[in-house]
Length: 62
Image: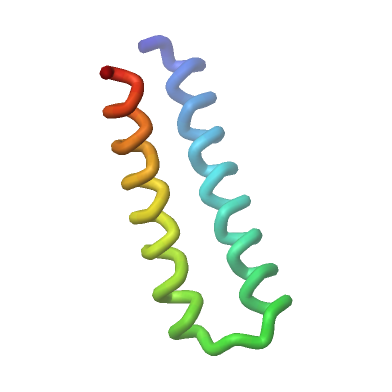
């Protein structure tokens, strides 16, 4: 992989991570909920998305 492509990939991933942290911080301060709810909601949303993708992929294969 060329160096310029690797640098672009690393910068893109870092920017996406920063945007995710910023969005999470904004959402956490915007709503009046305890941190434990947010700590549970994010992994549950990720698991739900993963299950959705698995089910969708299996429906297409049929």
